[in-house]
Image 1 (cartoon, rainbow, N blue to C red):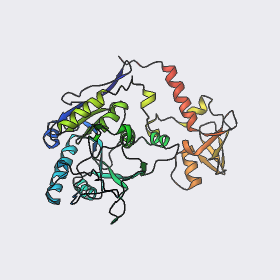
Image 2 (spheres, one colour; image 1 turned 120 degrees about the vertical axis):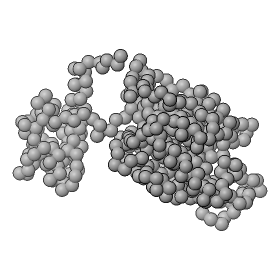
Image 3 (cartoon, rainbow, N blue to C red; image 1 turned 90 degrees about the horizontal axis):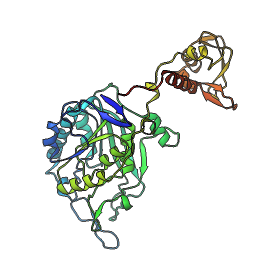
Image 4 (cartoon, rainbow, N blue to C red; image 1 turned 90 degrees about the vertical axis):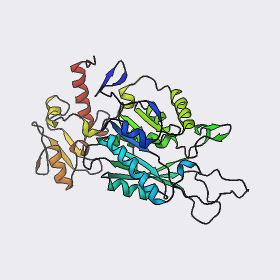
Length: 381
């Protein structure tokens, strides 16, 4: 249960859930200690099992700092698959029934992860391709440059209600529906965490990538779990977006870096208008007739079925509309005219005072705003 007090999100009934902490240890040992069905989102950036067998050199004879860390070493596919099944099962246990999971990988591992994900009962919602604007070249020239990584987004229970902030992602993409190919640069420059001029983590992800993941599939106050926390990118972004977070990391050096990094972030006071973007589907249901009854729409007023379509309808006093012999609700008439499923609130347009056309859904928002003002401020304790 979430409650808002004095501009701060307060989570109730989270006893036993170590939110906003980096837990030092192995995910396979710590995940079983967390309460069942307690987190809203899992973001996982697991070892890729890259299977590198030789050093990489640039044309100028300088050595490439490749991923050769011990945590990425496995004795074959069987061992990697066993490890993957264990951590995915543990994450599934702590996910809420409405929860979703994001996992990122490369061609080395993502297909194996995806297969196990489906075997465990997850339902894949999307695969998203992170297209790197500045990928590392293939200096040996024996294969195509690896210029992308793949993210799988899956829900725990097929058909369950889950969070997807469609309008927020659309706004982030300049008003266009966001696609599943995300063109973002690698983590470089000041964002790249270094110690004595050397990268602290070989696979640090850019905050812009996690920003899309977390903004799209959580709401303020939701709990984001990262079982392979590294230097804490998911925690840093969660804190900035007023989400709660839990990080699990077995490398003591990464743990300390992550704690310092996140502690330095000052997200400011929570404001619902700044950080919460409820979907249109979650809006309160309003009969179109209510807009007629309160005078926001007048009987006899003309509506247009999308400005580019040209079909017109007349509003009736009982809240129905009439167009070319068809009569019914805004949804029924639009479906008949378009011969396709549609939402009448978004299909029908009215003329505003400035002469511009806007969807009648704008009037529904005005109606709801008026109702909220008449009801007065909510009592939040």
